[in-house]
Image 1: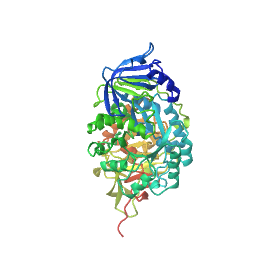
Image 2: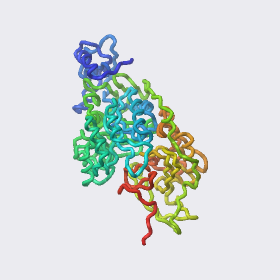
Image 3: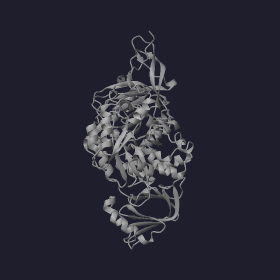
Image 4: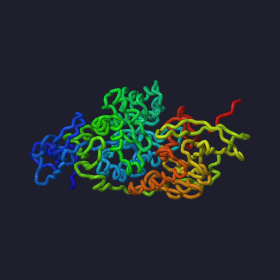
Length: 602
C-alpha cells in the first residue's frame, strides 16, 4: 500500500474527520499496548488510526475509524513504540550514502536521523553538503541535516579540501531539510569569541534552529562555562557522570553515545539512574557507526537496549531516543511520539527490554518486518567529480615515510599518539627510539609503529610522519584510509615503509577507501569511491568487506576493539590530547603544532 505523506496543514482536515469517525483511516492498529512517551505510561488494549502518513486517533477503540478500504493490523498485545530517533550522527561514518544507510537502519526501527555531514563538507564543501541533503530528502524515513559548522574543524591546525563560511551557513538555513547547525567543534574559537564561529551561531539562531555542540575537553571550569554561554544547545563529547551533569545544569542536552567505538552511555546515565536528574535533558545517539555495526549489531535499537542494560527504565530509555530528541530540535509536534498529528512512525515489539523489532511503520507505511526491508531507498545520481577526490600528486615511495633524526642523534625522545580503546581522546605519550643510518626506527616490542598523513585534496605529494601506539601490530604491514576525520586526508599506519607506500598508492588508484597490507600483499580492500568516504553499494556488501578489513587488522596483530574507528580519528585535531595533521603533530591540549621530538636539555 502506498500512502501519500503530507504536512500537518495539508492533512489536518482529514485527521480531524478520521478521529471523529466521519472518514475512514488508511491504517488501524488494534489491540496493542501503547507506550506513551509523553506520560511515561503503558496503555494496554489501545488502538491507533493513521491517515495521510500521520496519527489521527490514539485511544481505546478505533472501530469508528475503520472503513471498507482500511488496512487493519492486529497487534495482539504487543508494544507500540514510537520510531527511534538518532540525535547526532554522521552518515559518512557508516561508509554508506544516505540511501544505503537508510536501507541498513530501517529494519532496526530507526525512522528519524539528525545528521551532520561535516565529513563530506571537508572534501567537497557546501556542494557536498547539498548532495547529502538532497539524497536524504528522497528517503522513506526522516533524515534531517545539520549544516556543518567547522571545516576546517580547527583553523590554522589543518587544511581541508574546502572551507565552510558563515555565508554558507546562512545560505543553507533556508534549505528544506536543514534543522540546525552541526556540532561546533572549534570550541576554543567559541570560548575566545571568534567572529566567524559566532556569526555561524547567530545565523542559526536567527533562523530559529538548533546549534549543535562539541566540547571535547575534561575541563569544567571557566572555559566550559564560556562555551555554554556561546550558544551550543547540546553536547555529545561527555564521557563521565560529571560531564553529563555539568552540561544539563547549563541548559544543554547531554547526548550520550554508543557507536562503533564510543561507549559513553554507561558512564553517564547514572546521572539519571542514580543521581535522579530529570531525564528530559538526556538524549541517546550513535555519533559514528560503521557498516559492520549496522548490519551485525543494530543502530538505535542497540543503544536503547544498552541503556536498559545499564539500569535505565525501558520507557525512560525510549523517551531518550524519541520524544526528548524531537523536543530538542523543536519537532515535538511533528514526530517522536505516538500522538495525534505526528508522523506515523511506529514499531511493534513483543518485549520492551530486549526490543525485538518485529514491524516498522514509517509515515504510515510498513517499511520493514522481522529484519527485512519492504520499501525502496532512492539514490541520487552522484556526479563524477564527487567520485574523483583522491589526488596524491605522485607515486609514493618508501622513503616518503622516512623520519630523519636530529643531526648526530643516536636515540631520540619522540612524542607518540596513544590510542585509548573505546574512546575518542588519545594520550600524549613519549618513547625513547633508536636511530639507524640517520633515521628514527619504530619499536615493535613497545607497540610503537609509524603513522603518516598523506595530503590528498590538492595533490601536493606532502607526507607528515609520526608515531602511534596501542594497535599492537606485528611484522611488516600497513593500513591506509581516506576516511580521516575531519580533514579527510589519508592516514597510513604501519610497521613497514614499503607497505605504507603500497597502501597509499592503492587508495590513489581506486579513488579512496581502506586497504590493509602485509608482507607486500593486500589482505583487504574497502572501496569508498564517493568523496573517498562512502560507497553506494548495499550495506551488506560494504559490511562484508569491512569484516575482511577487521580480520586483516587482526591478522596483523591488532586486538583493539573497533580499531578501524580509532585509526580514522587519528587526525581529529579537536579532541585531546595528540593528533596528526597536514601541518604537523598537533597538541590539542594547547591547540598548537608541536615538534615530533622533545628537545634535549641544554
